[in-house]
Length: 66
Length: 244
Image (cartoon, rainbow over all chains, first blue to last red; front, side, top):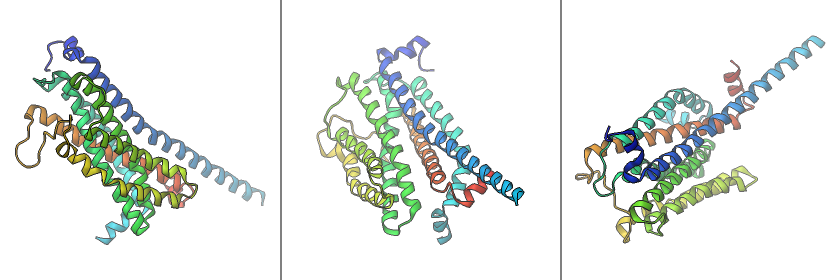
């Protein structure tokens, strides 16, 4: 490691808030653009599976009725 | 050759491709992102002039580089969609826009945070920074324009034209530091001749640039998969794939 201590690494020569803040904000943005499609795909897939199940059970019910 | 081109236009093929690559690319990219950040933050040496605030470049430069490259991806997809009317191309164009907007936002925000301790100001209306802001508006404009139209075919066409016209901005951003007297420093990494940056700083920076490209590819595939799932929710191939 380049720094002598954890405190030194956090301080960043007096610019700690800037450096760590810049990384923090960037990671938050990356996290959100990454999470948005993943969550959306999950919801969509669940909907498609549910719809398929509903159709299947409707078909079975119709077959039983006839 | 034509078979490959045809495959790229086939939604089931592209869906399957994304589905197969994402589980590999996601962990690799996350690990690379963390490794590169730790390297740049804790292991690279301090800059003798700028001190430790220079460490912001390990995010700032990769985000800016890929934000520009990503614009070509979006504009090229727009061109393909306009000329050959490939539906998948405008899906790709829309997939690229939010990623580009996020990258440009990261470049602008980290640049502002770096500017405060280094230049003494959060923001300057300088050629490089202003043209970058225009890039951000172009990305956001494509997203907003698509939402503004009820008819999505017309929306895609308008977005394609906007992204193609916006391409003018890209060489302006590249050359802004040479054409105008600018506060922003010119590029330190050069493809020809020696770079103005030491190897101990260059390697983590190159690593982060590659990582940001990989992240762009990953996000592109995730957005494509998301759009395809939405568009083809009723299709037989997707239903078969999801319920099998």
